Length: 218
Image 1: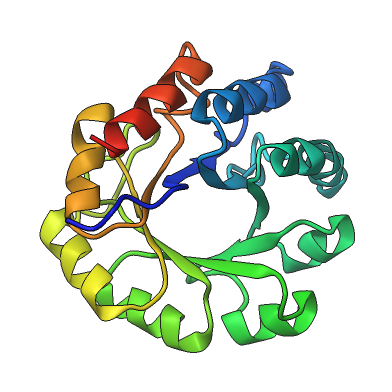
Image 2: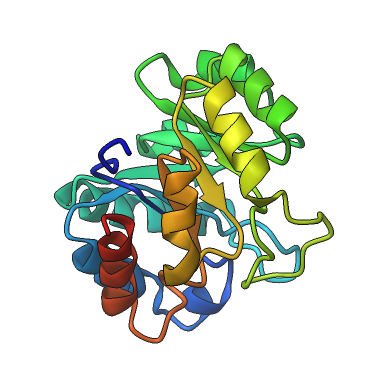
């Protein structure tokens, strides 16, 4: 088996609860500290549900606070969907998907030095994103998600393995990630795991992320 990637963890913010209780920054800090420099990306995903979505101004303020925190732990800050806000705050990249602007258009907005991630729900979608110029792919759900209801059946480890063989960019497994199945994702060829519930929504984000990266190397 190949050596485990040195930064296998991708952290996603929960979309409302932590922000509305003024605990988002604290939990991200704890998660980053627990992972001990092994987080590749932190995705700021706070404009999801219409009823609790952050305003553009709130996203900008959060991003400007989180950016130096992420950099101090050698992690990159990614803004969900919004290439324009990515450019405004000088974040490290943007996360796109089927309903966002295209990868080529986002590249024109943020430049060649920034990272573009793509949320794919099939092997074919991941391959297409890779060919279009994405820097990495989130593929999911691999297992049944723990943080939200999913209308998409789990893809499973076979699809994860097949996708990792087809694309030349990092693939992070998303959906239902736990300490018990993270290693299975590694064995399938994933570069890392992306999670909400098992990171910043955990009761103890420090310990939760420490456990995730420790289990990844077993």
